[in-house]
Image (cartoon, rainbow, N blue to C red; front, side, top):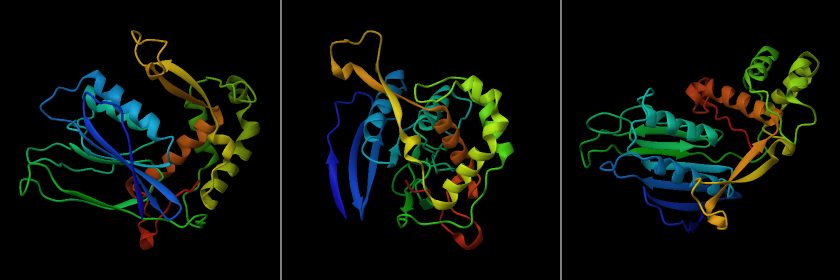
Length: 274
């Protein structure tokens, strides 16, 4: 196993370390973070967190964020929990810690891998023994490349249709036809798209065309200097079909043993490889 430290810009709202671990032919990016609980959660925290994630997502498809964020993510109706969850959704990441990690309650310590990563055997040890925070342990299971899965949950045509109809009618430059026209004639495309998605799930592959995006540089803040490159952040816009496929992938994973990616029968690990 080979590791490489990644240099980060100066951060004002949290401390962080980013390391790339090379496991076989796979680069796994670990993003360890500590945000002091004594500090209030400001908008700048989410902006810095988003900026770092945008950059490290370019390094690998296998990214895990972990550490003490000191945000009560278990409070679903709290504004900070909602914003943090939206950030994770933006990068197709999902927290696997589902229980309190502090002696006074609250899920403050998180392990947040990209949806398709096989992070399993998550264990939260009792807090208040060595620290007021719990020790959190998990396992990353390397899956052989091009592994084929014969047992998987299929997407029905009704599942695909429901996601398409709920999606915003926006059109990307990569779309061959207008989204409004696609929705109008959905019955014509539905059988082929359903077969494509299920074939991807069965073979563990993902079409390269769905990985393409239109990247637009946006100012991080209205007051930022437009003459400075660091004032911009990249905004990626996928094709409409790519967004639909991504959403359906997430729905399938959420239905697999609580979204961890392990099937109850025979404890078979399931992962979609690029």
